[in-house]
Figure 1 (cartoon, rainbow, N blue to C red):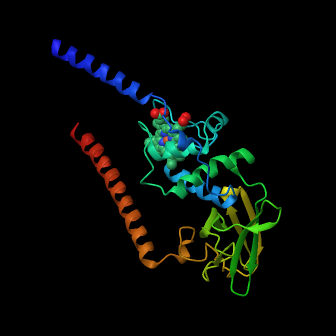
Figure 2: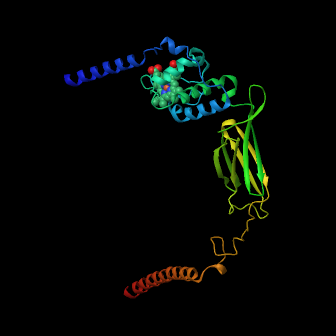
Length: 289
Ligand code: HEC
């Protein structure tokens, strides 16, 4: 008993000690604090940072600005909160990511310097625009019937107000079907700022070859639709005119009919047999009285 008590109090002490060690403040060397982000604060870098954040930080820190981080002790901060961003210089955030502390892993060996600075560019971008969405971003679609291709691009404005195409932006292209949208292509805009897919040859539209193409750039909260009339026209079958669940018995294969009549017939034979046997019991009972 005493042994158990000792073990328990020792564990409690150890736990308190561990919490105390973790709860220590970050110690940032002076030279680190004053470091500034070598990357330009632009849409491309913030886009890259967003991707790194989604893969490496979101699991603990939650969505930026949403304060839905994991309930750890000490808690991971909402890295999008104004309180965190005003309290930390770029150099401090970089140092914290690089070294880690307690449950916060060190990303020194996991992410390159550029990737870590890109996360900071992403976090800082939120100061300029709502929820880090580039308000100048504009999605456009070109449908080309000649090679049956759909091409999408995203433009934004640079610091001087000039229109530029975004490279490496995520695009998803889908076609509207009866039960939702079917993705036909997913990827990033290339060096010329475009992402395109060819409509699969066997992808049918309606009976006139019409179809609705939907292009989504989730990161920029943009969605555009375009109607095309050069999808492969689909032949609509009359569902009762063939052997199918909705078909009539006239179209059923002979062996299904035979099987059905056989099963239904034998069930009736058994029922009639049972009724006859019951009648026989009644008859025998009368005879023996
Ligand atoms: C396994 C969970 C986990 C992951 C993954 C994680 N963190 Fe953390 N982070 C924490 C915890 C827990 C703390 C609090 C640590 C402490 O104060 O002892 C923290 C603290 C921080 C801090 C300091 C916050 C402050 O208030 O000073 C920064 C900056 C930070 N993390 C950035 C990141 C970045 C950027 C990533 C992704 C590259 C990341 N973290 C990934 C758990 C995590």
